[in-house]
Image (cartoon, rainbow, N blue to C red; front, side):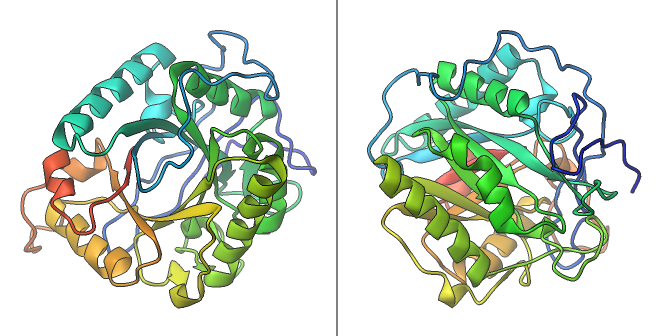
Length: 329
């Protein structure tokens, strides 16, 4: 995989953040494979407010899950191919998010919809940075920009970590100052946790329960020290080996854990993966990811799965348990 990334030994990048992702799984629904791109739209519409003064529009609930359903747009503002968050200009993106939220609210009026922006804040890279860790930390400016979009629009924000060869604890520490805000939450992606030392994109990575427990304990401490509402932790998953020893994951009242079915394909294949990798190994709450483009791709003609289409809210809500976190890419 070619790279156009730039970075420094400390993990701080230049003005050109870039993003990457891994190859799809062979034994499951497949994941988006965005290419690395230099940012085409780095101009900030309005200067992002400082993290410690940014006010959230609207009222934050004391507890998000299970009282609400979270509806998120995923991506990175420096890549039009990584997901809906970066594909469209800010105003159009937020308009589209509002339209999706209205559809989901109509499909299940019993669960208030909480809109969200899910930013890939630390992105796996196809080539090593100067510290050799194959990951790029987004700049403070980029992270605050997306946080400002969310706060001003009444949308919570998730900061997603793709560690590459880095240590998860170090990447959590990098994001701590943002996670101290009540509307900022966390996502971690096992696909890019390359414990074998392989280059991201060549194999599917993995997290053990111990890694997830580290993230839970980290968030729990932040909640306690800053007197915050419970945090939400999203863990992406679309293969068996992406999460190991799930029975050892420890629940904490200060953290709501979402296991998110993160694969793409026709509905029947996505539903199979939800049942095989999320329902059969339950943790706490469940999530489901929808791909505007990849879910429409045709699969092998020998497959027994039906013609692909983008699943409607009613189709996803027919699953048991009903997912409480919905992500569009």
